Length: 383
Image (cartoon, rainbow, N blue to C red; front, top):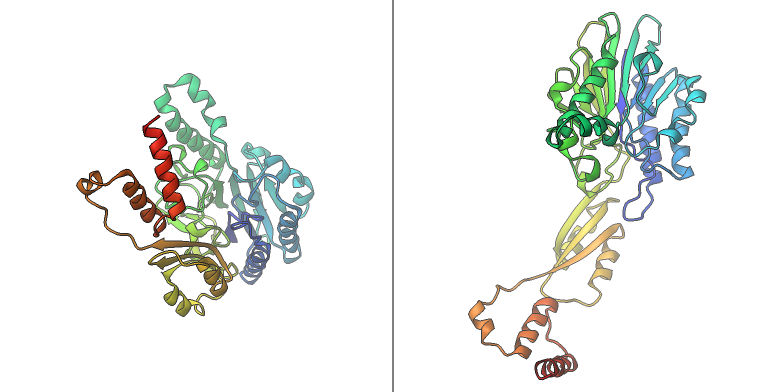
């Protein structure tokens, strides 16, 4: 059987208030085309389908349009909730979608009540068991730990209980079926980019890679946006996000994972790159250097750092004229070496103020401002 593993779509996310729905639409088109071309039996979506618990209607339309393409291609889907998804909202259409072989799992369930999804192959000769672990909020796992154990064991308790849940979900797996696990969680030691929100990524609430079940042929993860394979008892991958979601993900090669497995045999895993999203780049240099780079950045979104000797009126506007896709423009000035402390002690208050103003603004203070300073200083010291 063949599967396409993807995750962390974050449909609806903006970048510096700029909407990116056109990029998400192209990325989902690309994923759908890969699924059809690879003749996969199912698409596995490991959480964070939307970027917020209340996504805009345009974001929901993109997701459901994607799902609507699968049944006519005889492709099933298993989709779980991530920490950005609202479980009840995501599950509102679960019964309707199940009739189309699209299995939505917004919350943890026992194996016999939806925690394991049974999928037949296209030709009906094989069967897959897909165990699903949607995102589990930390507070729901550690409540018991706060009562039963000292505080320093709370975090150990989280990992241990997740391990127990994974073991329970996969306990019924046998060599007679293709056995897969998809989950939305953090594995300690995984490489983390700045695209993930820190609230959900402290390693104290992670699971050790060795706690991943060994009786599965593939573990497909969501939560981290950097594509990567982990050293675990079973082949374990974060598929990564669809596009570069913020500048912490710049230069990451986005992908989907194709998994091919037969009962009782090791799975074969390959990556297929995605190209739909616009690249994010940092550009730095003097204004003259930036002028030489203007034709080389394509349609990438940019953070621009301009080097200047001192204030230049309208420099930000000049940069934005060169780079219409610049989302952030900052100017850095040449810094002089700090003055020895002994020299500073020899300066009068007005001279100290002038020195500070020059360092802050790369220009001398106006005469009116210096007069005001001296007046206020005189009043303060003689009151």
